[in-house]
Amino acid sequence: MKYLIIALTLLSTVNANALTFNNYLKKPKLVIVLVIDQFRADFLTRFQKTFMDEKVKSEVGGFNFLMKNGAYFPNAEYNVLQSMTCPGHAMIMSGALPHENGIVLNEWFEKKTNKKIYCVSDDEYKLSPRRLKGTTLGDELKNVYKSSKVYSIALKDRSSIMLGGYRADLALWIDNDEMKWTTSSFYRNDIPDWVKAENEKLVKNYKLSKENIKEAKKDLATYLGVKITVDMAIKAIQEEKLGKNVSPDILAISFSTHDMSGHTNGPDSLEIRGISHVEDREISRLLNVVKKSLGSLDDVTVVLTADHGIAPNVETSQANKIDSGKIDYDEVYKKVNERLTKKFGKPSKDWIQGHRSFHFYLNEENFTDKPELKALVQAEMKTVVKTIHGVRDVATSNEIDNGKFPIGEIGEQLKRQYLAGISGDVILIPEPFYMEKDDNCTTHITGYSYDRSVPLILMGKNFKAGVYSGANVIDMAPTLSFILGILPGSNSTGKVLSQTLGL
Image (cartoon, rainbow, N blue to C red):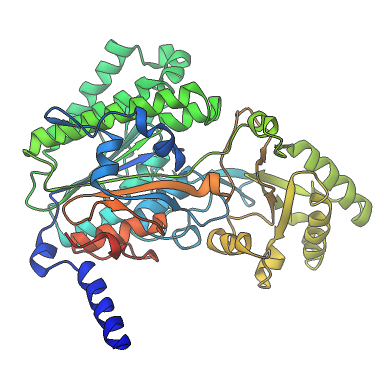
C-alpha cells in the first residue's frame, strides 16, 4: 500500500508539471524580457504595498501585476564570485555561466596590449557581442523561425549587446558622447528613421545633447532614463510590429537608470525607492501598449529579472554595528611592492602591471628568465594581501591551475567564473560588506547574497502563477527555449524550470 501511494504521488507530480502536446504547440507571439540593472531581490518585497495595484480599471499594473500573475521566484540567484552588469546580462540570455560564455567581468586587463579591455569592445566594429562565446536565446530563435525579430534596448551599450546577442535585428543604446540612441555596424550601418525621430525628441523635449552633456548624464540617472527607455521600446513595438509576426518575436529591455542611481545614492535611499516606483509605472505603460497593440496579453510572455543586486552603503552597515569598509588599491600596491621587493629584489618592471575589480595582473617581463618565480611571487602576494583588513581570502592562478580553490561555496563560485587569460593572476576576495574604494557610494562585485540575489518572474500562458523557490538566473533562457520549441544557447547549462509549467 505504501509503494502504491508513492507511485501515485510521483505520477500526480509528473502530470502537474506536464504541458499537453497541444498546449506545447501554442507558442507566444511576443517574448518581453525586462531586466532592471542593480535590482536586488528584496526591492519587490520591500516596496510591494506601495506599487500600483495589479489592475487599474481596464489596464494592467506593473510589478504587482507580474508578481500575482506570473511564476515568481523572490530569490533567484547568480552563483558566481562577482556579480556585475556584463556577466549578468550575458548569463540571462545565454543560460551559460561566465567561464562558459567568456564574459567574466565588465572589464579586464590585457597584458600584451597593456590596456583594459571592455567586454563588448571590438577592433573592427568598435562595439559588438564577439567576446561572448556561444549563442543566446535570440540567436537560437532565428535558427528555427527565420522571420522572427529580435530587438534589445538599454541605456548601456553592454547591456543591450549582451541581450541582443549575435543575430539581433537591432541592439540600441545611448551614445554617451553624443547623447542619442545608436547601434553598432555589427548589426547595421545606420539606424532606422523611427530611431532618428526619437533622437530628435531627446534634444527637443529633454535637452539631451552633447552640447548639454553634463546635465544630460545626470538626467539619465533620474526618472527620465526610465521613461526614454520605455519610449524607445514602445516605438520598436509599433514600428516593427512586434508580436504580429507569423513566428515569435523577442524584445529585451534593460533599465540602466536603477544602477546609475544606486551607485550614487545606495539601496536604502529615497532616490532608489522613487526610481523603483517610476519603473513600476513605466512597465505598466509598456504592458498596456502591448495589450492594446495585440488585443490582449494572452499570447505574450513577460520575464522580469535583474543582472545583479547591490551592497548596503558602508555607513549603513557600520551604523548597524556590522563590520564594513572599503579596500584601498593604493594600500594593496604599497604593501605588495614593499614585500615582494624585499624578498625577491627590485624587479625590472613594476610587479603589478594592472588591476580591475579585485583582479591583479602581474608583469610577465619579471619572469622571462625565471618562469618558476611567478608562482613564488603569487604565493607571497597572497600572504601579504590577506593581512589587509577586509580581505577574506586570495586565490592565485597557479593554485587554480593545480586544482586548488578556496574552501566552500566561494571556491565553487570561483570555478564558475574563472577564465585563464581574462581573470587575474591574483584575485582578492573581500569579506562581506567590503568593497573597492572608489567614487561610488556602494557597489556589487561579490558573490554574497546581497549581490547575487535577484527576482525572477515568468508570466504567460505556459506558466503557472505562484511563488516558487530554487531558481538560478541561468535557468531563464533554457525555460524560454523550451516553450518556444528551440534549442537552448550553445553553452547553456541552466535547467528548465519545469515546476512552473503546466497551464
